[in-house]
Length: 458
Image 1 (cartoon, helix red, strand yellow):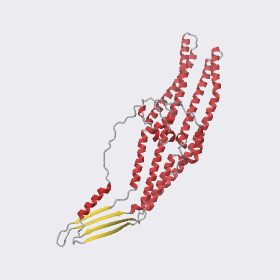
Image 2 (tube, one colour):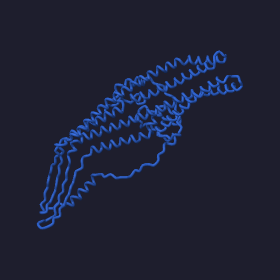
Image 3 (cartoon, rainbow, N blue to C red):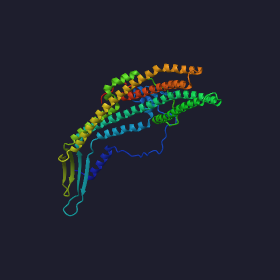
Image 4 (spheres, rainbow, N blue to C red):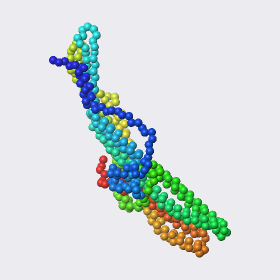
């Protein structure tokens, strides 16, 4: 009968390890020392099929034409550098879910005794193979927790994509609103500058009193100060939009006009208030995180039961007696018993439960406030539009009266300034309505963020 050889057993075990382990390799990945934004608009990604928002994915982007609001939002989701790092988090969560599903490795030990002295007939050895079955008890809960965490991470990334699209839309709206506002200011500045040159010539020839020219100079300086403030704000918004798109700051961006407010979005947003928990990705992500925490608590509860290990051994002593053995080990939960882990997981679940309630109440309150703000701004816009014809007629009448000499220049300037302020207020109201519309769509998942079909419950 052929006897068992310890060396052969070790060789066979090593071969099995190499066969089944699937060892991974290592390759270094050094960090880059310098990074550069895209130097041309044409270098941006424009394939919108990967955008997870149906309305943006349906866009046809023409970089040679002025970009409308939806196109800018889609480009932001495709090209924002911060979203690249955020999407990497999904890979980490999936790797953790993969690790949670792996079975525990068996343990192997080997020893050999070389005898010294009389009475020994052979060397002794001991080979043992053990399996820890304790992780099999908690494996289902651990896998469930990891999978729920993957859903949570995916939904957090989707929420970041929503926020990126909304941020790009806000920058767009404010830039276009400033462009319309500055067009009014520039026309008024040019008219005042021309009149001021004529008035100074008249003052020099003695045909006009100096206070009249000084009054126009003060008005001109005030308008130029407002234009300079707008230019600084426009520069900051333009830089923000370029960063979001991953563009170099000197790449020109042509934007289309300010979008009109769609009353259907308000109706859709109001109807969505009762389903925010199933629509908003951040709320869905928090619910998935809560489900993961539930599984972690279940895992901790299961871990309080005795952990079982089984082992097999083959040995030979120095008198050349061969033995086969079998053993079972138990961990007795007398002192720890997973009580600490259970307490931590219960406290963590309670915290997530309260976070969920607070986040849901805050989301509903913010959406209702946005709806109220839009309604108030619409009433303000209607009031401004109703008053504009009268102010326009008053400004025209004051110019005619000034030519006839019926009123003073100061009175005519007040009428013109009132008309300008009304037009500027109209532009501001339209801009603020568009801003609140973007915020409302983000808060309720309407408009740009509307799903193609009702969101499935997590």
